Length: 145
Picture (cartoon, rainbow, N blue to C red):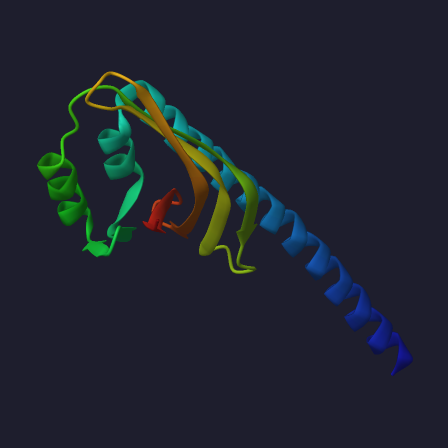
Protein backbone atom coordinates (compact mmCIF):
# COMPACT_ATOMS: atom_id res chain seq x y z
CA UNK A 1 0.00 0.00 0.00
CA UNK A 2 2.79 2.43 0.90
CA UNK A 3 4.38 1.70 -2.46
CA UNK A 4 1.25 2.90 -4.29
CA UNK A 5 1.02 6.06 -2.21
CA UNK A 6 4.62 6.91 -3.14
CA UNK A 7 3.88 6.26 -6.82
CA UNK A 8 0.77 8.47 -6.70
CA UNK A 9 2.61 11.30 -4.90
CA UNK A 10 5.47 11.20 -7.42
CA UNK A 11 3.03 11.14 -10.35
CA UNK A 12 1.10 14.11 -9.00
CA UNK A 13 4.34 16.03 -8.30
CA UNK A 14 5.68 15.60 -11.83
CA UNK A 15 2.28 16.31 -13.35
CA UNK A 16 2.14 19.64 -11.49
CA UNK A 17 5.69 20.46 -12.56
CA UNK A 18 4.85 19.81 -16.23
CA UNK A 19 1.65 21.86 -15.99
CA UNK A 20 3.57 24.80 -14.48
CA UNK A 21 6.05 24.68 -17.36
CA UNK A 22 3.15 24.71 -19.82
CA UNK A 23 1.53 27.66 -18.02
CA UNK A 24 4.80 29.61 -18.36
CA UNK A 25 4.89 28.82 -22.09
CA UNK A 26 1.31 30.10 -22.47
CA UNK A 27 2.13 33.27 -20.52
CA UNK A 28 5.03 33.92 -22.89
CA UNK A 29 2.77 33.35 -25.91
CA UNK A 30 0.33 35.94 -24.57
CA UNK A 31 3.12 38.42 -23.79
CA UNK A 32 4.55 37.96 -27.29
CA UNK A 33 1.09 38.47 -28.80
CA UNK A 34 0.55 41.63 -26.73
CA UNK A 35 3.90 43.01 -27.92
CA UNK A 36 3.10 42.19 -31.57
CA UNK A 37 -0.29 43.91 -31.12
CA UNK A 38 1.35 47.06 -29.74
CA UNK A 39 3.98 47.03 -32.48
CA UNK A 40 1.32 46.76 -35.20
CA UNK A 41 -0.50 49.75 -33.69
CA UNK A 42 2.73 51.76 -34.10
CA UNK A 43 3.57 50.60 -37.61
CA UNK A 44 0.20 49.97 -39.27
CA UNK A 45 -2.16 52.10 -37.21
CA UNK A 46 -4.46 51.59 -34.26
CA UNK A 47 -7.57 50.46 -36.21
CA UNK A 48 -5.74 47.74 -38.14
CA UNK A 49 -4.03 46.43 -35.00
CA UNK A 50 -7.24 46.27 -32.98
CA UNK A 51 -9.18 44.53 -35.75
CA UNK A 52 -6.34 42.10 -36.47
CA UNK A 53 -5.86 40.98 -32.87
CA UNK A 54 -9.57 40.92 -31.92
CA UNK A 55 -11.52 37.68 -31.62
CA UNK A 56 -14.79 37.46 -33.52
CA UNK A 57 -16.68 37.68 -30.20
CA UNK A 58 -14.71 40.67 -28.90
CA UNK A 59 -16.27 43.26 -26.59
CA UNK A 60 -14.66 46.66 -26.08
CA UNK A 61 -15.66 49.38 -23.67
CA UNK A 62 -15.11 52.87 -25.09
CA UNK A 63 -16.43 55.66 -22.92
CA UNK A 64 -19.90 54.50 -21.92
CA UNK A 65 -20.38 52.36 -25.03
CA UNK A 66 -19.91 48.61 -25.38
CA UNK A 67 -18.81 47.59 -28.85
CA UNK A 68 -19.68 43.93 -29.36
CA UNK A 69 -18.24 41.79 -32.14
CA UNK A 70 -15.44 42.21 -34.64
CA UNK A 71 -17.71 43.68 -37.32
CA UNK A 72 -18.98 46.33 -34.88
CA UNK A 73 -15.37 47.07 -33.96
CA UNK A 74 -14.48 47.62 -37.64
CA UNK A 75 -17.51 49.90 -38.08
CA UNK A 76 -16.61 51.86 -34.96
CA UNK A 77 -13.14 52.59 -36.30
CA UNK A 78 -14.54 53.56 -39.70
CA UNK A 79 -16.96 56.04 -38.06
CA UNK A 80 -14.31 57.74 -35.98
CA UNK A 81 -11.48 57.74 -38.44
CA UNK A 82 -9.04 60.14 -36.90
CA UNK A 83 -7.71 63.12 -38.69
CA UNK A 84 -4.21 64.01 -37.71
CA UNK A 85 -1.45 62.19 -35.96
CA UNK A 86 -2.31 59.77 -33.16
CA UNK A 87 -0.34 57.06 -31.46
CA UNK A 88 -0.97 54.46 -28.82
CA UNK A 89 1.82 52.65 -27.03
CA UNK A 90 1.58 50.06 -24.29
CA UNK A 91 3.32 47.11 -22.74
CA UNK A 92 2.10 44.49 -20.29
CA UNK A 93 3.38 44.69 -16.74
CA UNK A 94 1.64 41.45 -15.80
CA UNK A 95 0.48 38.34 -17.66
CA UNK A 96 -1.45 35.38 -16.31
CA UNK A 97 -3.22 32.42 -17.86
CA UNK A 98 -5.66 29.77 -16.68
CA UNK A 99 -4.25 26.35 -15.84
CA UNK A 100 -6.25 24.97 -18.79
CA UNK A 101 -4.57 27.41 -21.18
CA UNK A 102 -7.74 28.74 -22.78
CA UNK A 103 -7.98 32.21 -21.18
CA UNK A 104 -5.42 34.73 -20.05
CA UNK A 105 -5.16 38.38 -19.19
CA UNK A 106 -2.68 41.22 -19.21
CA UNK A 107 -2.50 44.66 -17.70
CA UNK A 108 -0.05 47.51 -17.84
CA UNK A 109 0.39 51.15 -18.76
CA UNK A 110 -0.55 52.87 -22.00
CA UNK A 111 0.11 56.30 -23.50
CA UNK A 112 -2.26 57.79 -26.09
CA UNK A 113 -0.93 60.82 -27.96
CA UNK A 114 -2.75 63.08 -30.43
CA UNK A 115 -2.54 66.58 -31.85
CA UNK A 116 -5.14 69.13 -30.83
CA UNK A 117 -6.72 71.65 -33.21
CA UNK A 118 -3.83 74.08 -32.63
CA UNK A 119 -1.19 71.47 -33.45
CA UNK A 120 -0.17 70.88 -29.85
CA UNK A 121 0.69 67.38 -28.77
CA UNK A 122 -1.70 66.03 -26.14
CA UNK A 123 -0.98 62.84 -24.19
CA UNK A 124 -3.03 60.81 -21.79
CA UNK A 125 -1.79 57.89 -19.75
CA UNK A 126 -3.64 55.10 -18.08
CA UNK A 127 -3.88 51.44 -17.27
CA UNK A 128 -5.12 48.86 -19.75
CA UNK A 129 -6.57 45.44 -19.07
CA UNK A 130 -6.97 42.88 -21.84
CA UNK A 131 -8.53 39.42 -21.71
CA UNK A 132 -7.10 36.91 -24.19
CA UNK A 133 -8.73 33.72 -25.49
CA UNK A 134 -6.95 30.88 -27.24
CA UNK A 135 -8.47 30.35 -30.68
CA UNK A 136 -9.07 26.96 -32.33
CA UNK A 137 -5.91 27.48 -34.43
CA UNK A 138 -3.83 27.96 -31.26
CA UNK A 139 -3.36 31.72 -31.62
CA UNK A 140 -4.39 34.23 -28.95
CA UNK A 141 -6.99 36.93 -29.71
CA UNK A 142 -8.39 39.45 -27.31
CA UNK A 143 -12.03 39.22 -26.24
CA UNK A 144 -12.12 42.21 -23.86
CA UNK A 145 -10.32 45.53 -23.86
